Amino acid sequence: MRFYKLLIFALLLILGCGTAHAQINLLELEELKGLEIGVIAPNFDAVNQNGQRIHLDSILKDGPLVIVFYRGQWCPFCNRHLDAFQDSLALVSAFGANVVALSPEQPTYLKAMESKLELSYDLLYDEGYKIASDYGLLFDPGVALRNRYNTFLNANFKEAHQDDRGFLPIPATFIIDRDRRVVWKHFDPNYKARSSVLEILSVLSNLQ
Image (cartoon, rainbow, N blue to C red; front, side):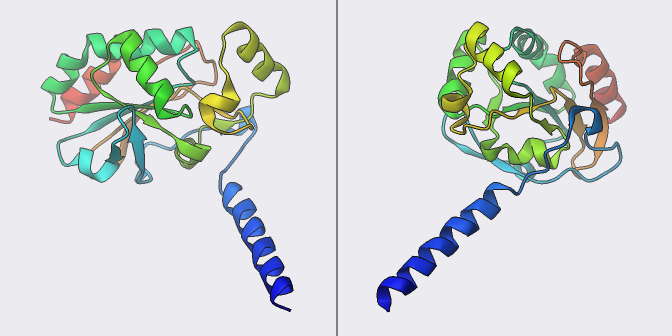
């Protein structure tokens, strides 16, 4: 009898894990819109490239926040985009704002990105794709595209994400104020189209 109770308990655990695993909103690419301007952004906490847990509400105590979603260290457009923020970080900081960038890649890969680009802002691990899902950005690129990224760009999704699903975020950018309200966003399913630092500085200047 005890064996059957243990077996049922184990099955419930497995089913429970499966349910938790599915707590993401995965949409088709053409259905994605990202968070609307004016809404309260979902709170989150995530581990950064140094293994430290970063809480959104704690960052916002210092001022507004620029949140950049990127695909991974393998993406040349992401590399250029994050590098542009590093080049302009002092200008962003002058408005009392911070920058964080999130990807589905675990901290080892975040650290590699930090070292490669000599970044001095936080890169956060979106474990289980939950943050990208909450922000309305998550999609499945499909087997063919995943294989292409793995083969030609060394994306290594299964290891980098610690997950064999290989989902990705739209590389969107949000500015949220100290009340966690979305005041600006750049959202474009075309991964080559990225937010402009000049646009972001203009928005931050109007929050003063």
